[in-house]
Amino acid sequence: MSRAAGWLLLVVALVLSRPAEAAQAQKVRVAVVRPEGRQGEALRKVLVQELGKKGRGREVLPARTVDAQVRRIRGGPKTDDQRQALAGKLGADTLVTASVKGTKRWDVEIRVYSGKDGSLLTEERWSVRPNRAFPEVRRELENRLGTALRAPRERSTPTPPAAVTPPAPAPEPEATPPTPIAEAPRPAVVKPPAPTPKKEPARVEPEPEPEAKVAGARSMDAPILKVLLSGQGLFRRFNFSDVRSGPRPDYSLDHAAAASLAVDYFPLAHFTDGMARNLGLAVRGSRALGLSTQTPDGEEYGTTAQLLEGGLRFRLPLQWLEVSVGALYGTHTFAVELPADSDLALPDVDYRFAHVELGLYKALTERWAIAARVGYQHVLSSGELSSDTYFPELSGSALDGELAVEFALTRMLGLRLGGDLRRYSLTTNADEASPSFVGGAQDTYFSGQLGVFLRL
Image 1 (cartoon, one colour):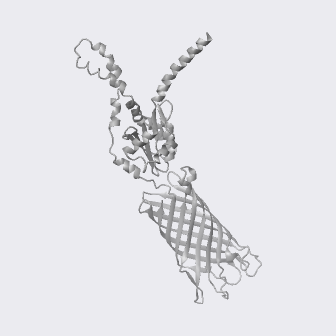
Image 2 (spheres, helix red, strand yellow):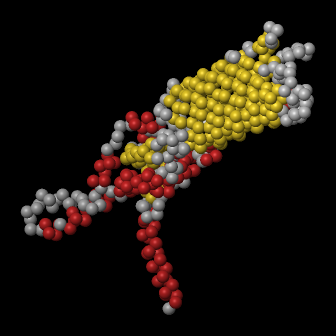
């Protein structure tokens, strides 16, 4: 008895498994190609999660499998033949492509292509607020694309309706015979699954011109590399303070020409779309050109004025502006090549400092933008000024700020006009009982700049 019951259970299990296998065989195989744009990978995750939900009759192919086949197609699947070939290699019924671009709002475009012939089934667009979870797209995706994604399944099983539909038109002209009641159930059974109303969006194939625009678009938001080359007008004022005995020479530079170069590079953006992509390197420097110093006796001596600093910068793109913080180390030199026997007690400075700064960047329009920066510097040493000859216990700090306006000539090139101010406050920490006591000094630099920037 138990043996017969076992055979009975086995037969029941086999019978019940057949519908599941049939349902699995009828699943639409969907391949999601990596979307274009900086946030492409985040959008792809949303598409894979939504399209592959249980109960929707779809099987989403693994991203690695899709990417491996896409890399074998030169220029990507941009034509019907390329998409048809890609779908054939993947065994996919449907291909989904997308793009995301924009700053204040993200423009999302999603297209569904037939795997049978590579033709466009449908396309949808969203204008959403920046959010890597894409809540609007997630909420509306099934309602907008569900019909197109079901079309391949209906096309793959057209034979049952075709076998039933031929007798359907026959009774219509024979409406007069007394047997229409027997024929009425047939059209009722045939009409609900008939794909005619659902085939309309599949047959309406838009012209291929918009596709070329999407493929050619490239988002320039949050550039990986930014280079600024500019010319500067340089000014300097150096003054001792609280001098108790004897004059101390001050220094005044009314004008000088300088060249500067600033580079921001975010190498991790090549490998990830996550937060780590916003951590980068910052380097900037400037040097005076043809600068000389004239002493009270009329002699002129060559003078060196240069600034060099570099370190790390982290940017945080927000909805309305970009905020950045930086930690840098730098040197700032101002030296006059006086002869060894000179009586002019004018010390050179060679500041070594640790620098932290906060930056803001705001796009006003598509072409105009404004940038601002403030920073604090802790002076570690001051060169000759902090030597035993002058003030060995010298300490100091500095504040700096910059304000600039940018105008974009193209998507990559533009002009930048601005100015920056840097002021060192120094304390000698000398013995107040000394007859040659000096309390401190102030060293102020100002420069105006006009330059060209490149963004990639």
